[in-house]
Length: 127
Image (cartoon, rainbow, N blue to C red; front, top):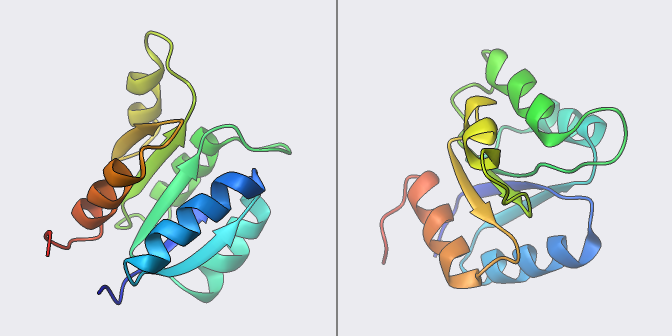
């Protein structure tokens, strides 16, 4: 079981719930945000071990811009960010990685793949 924390930045409640259920079952402590503003509020209070970032967020800032801002802040630039996105057109993956994401998982999310990605990027080996 993990003692690591994961911040899920996702505006769709069902997607948040699926990720929460799967990762809490693996022992991860979950932090959740639906907007860029909520993300910065959480980050100001606690630095997670990993951020799972939806690219299509409501409001004025999408996941790509949010990732850029997180990665330019010395307090959080070391935190791995894995994009969770339905964007699967040619060039989307490259654009998302150029924004600063460390990896990419396409939606719909395969929960087995999700757990493997989280273990890898949270610095844990498979048990």
